[in-house]
Amino acid sequence: MLKKNLGDDMDLSNIDISNLTRNLNEILILATLFLEKKHGYQIALDIEEKSDGVFKFNHGTLYPILHKLEKAGLIKGTWKGEESTRQRKYYTITTKGRKYAQEQLAGWKGFFKEFFDIVGEIEK
Amino acid sequence: MLKKNLGDDMDLSNIDISNLTRNLNEILILATLFLEKKHGYQIALDIEEKSDGVFKFNHGTLYPILHKLEKAGLIKGTWKGEESTRQRKYYTITTKGRKYAQEQLAGWKGFFKEFFDIVGEIEK
DNA sequence: TTTGATATATCGAATCTCGATATATTGACA
DNA sequence: TGTCAATATATCGAGATTCGATATATCAAA
Image (cartoon, protein in one colour):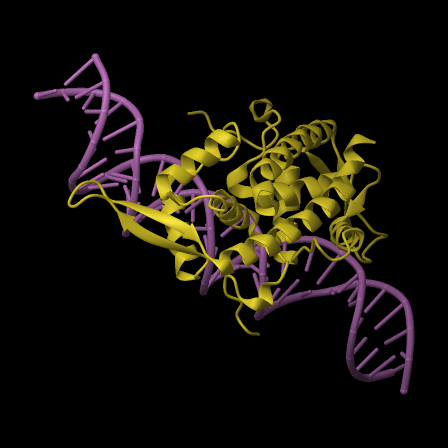
């Protein structure tokens, strides 16, 4: 079996049900970068604030994911900061990243459809 | 910090975002048992069929979860089978299990709301 | 000058899923 | 009658992921 890598064409609109949290973290980060570039710490703060605290990022989780997304070519990071002052790494979403995010979103919609189809039983 | 156990009163309507797949598997199983008792293998088949193949259970995942849910008092298993023939373990959802499932569902709805609040950006 | 927030990064422990392996029953088909 | 595939439960090791701690450093405010 060929190994599927992040953002490969094979991925299409499927999300990996066996690792939903990883998929969630990825799409939250990509969605946050859709309108403007941001550095890692800001991404985490924005997601936490916008979700009223429902989605939080530990730093030990955030940075490895950013490195992975960059390595996969879905985002691109650039160091900024005036000469020997504080350095921030600003991330931009790539064309590949936008496409990947749209496919993932389609996968999540399918997920929620089937999900509420089954767990709806609880409310009947 | 007090450790939270599955189904404890502390849990309330929160789902564990850092382990979404586990939460998903639990609520799928509990929802499937809401109307009638079933044995493990049947639970997996029913979920797979009803979700059009979106949700699948490996046996190596299914049985440990059933044992865990039973240990937590959310489901109750009873062996059945006529004397030395094939033994099936039928599971029933408990009152505690029903309550837990309803609280979890509330948590998933909150998740759903905040999720699309953020990833909706992708479609704009 | 000292504290807390900002900013990035890595590591070990704990946890979870996957796929393989094991064992046994049952029904269908040749 | 024999054999194969599906049914049924269970456990284990490998791999992946998140958490919380730890480390380092800048910046602003009191």
